[in-house]
Length: 175
Image (cartoon, rainbow, N blue to C red):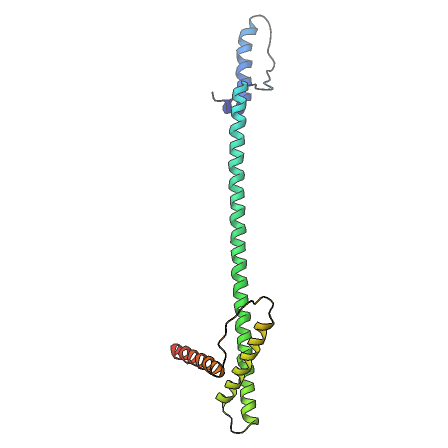
């Protein structure tokens, strides 16, 4: 019988011992009322081996549980990052829409108040203002060490042309 089976069938063993003792002792006039197996004491090496097996099984279970917990943490972290990026994208989209709405309102108001100006004239002026505002912010930033920006009479016009071309290409691609 294997050692695990001995522990599991302790009561069956006690009954078998009782039956055998009853047979042997009845000839001498003794009656066996009950036999108890209180403790099973295997060899020290067997005990050590059993403890190592139990410890290894518990370590394996603990490692599986730890890995599962780490997996859940990584999944939750990834889900949080995805949600954060989604919300950040929504914020940027709303910010850009507000800028476009503000520019449209400014262009219409300026065109109405200054006769003879076109929307293109107003947009060129807005681009020049934003160009200088951007240069001012770059210069005021303490984290900037060196930034090379083309500057001169044609630089703003070149930037305006590039922006317009980009918008026109974007609109053509959407059609």
